[in-house]
Length: 163
Image 1 (tube, rainbow, N blue to C red):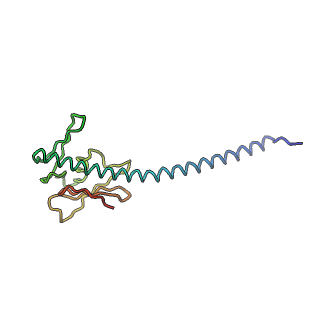
Image 2: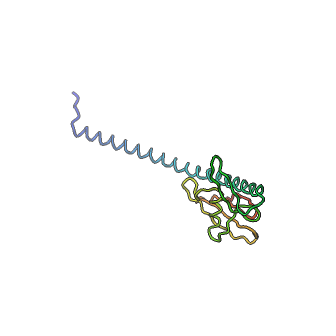
Image 3: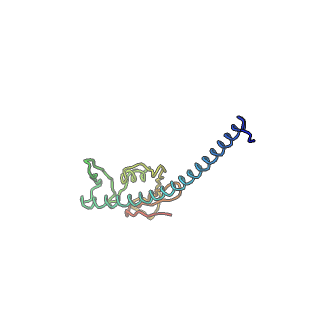
């Protein structure tokens, strides 16, 4: 004759089942978090490359507008589908620049992209690299925490990826 399980045996079985379920859920959460964070870095890298391309395009648009406007000190850019205008300071060669001695690269970023120094929740660091070969401009480096960066030369308008 089969013996029916008593209350304490049922409770012990339920506790073991509960612990097994909790362990399985914890393992699955760990795996999902690992996948999420590995993809987040890839997404940030891809977004930063896209941002560098956008930066290059905007620099060239501003320079083209400078040429069409007969080379003013400040270029006025009309925003698409808006009455809002953007005023961009350029140097005598028509490339985006700033006459601020401190935070000039930050100002160049703001004038060019009109957005915070950030890409996918990762801060972008803007530094000016002093280079004696650059006489009429500055060299700005924009980089993110993983070391990915691009340089902008305000004397030539060149934007170059740095690895």
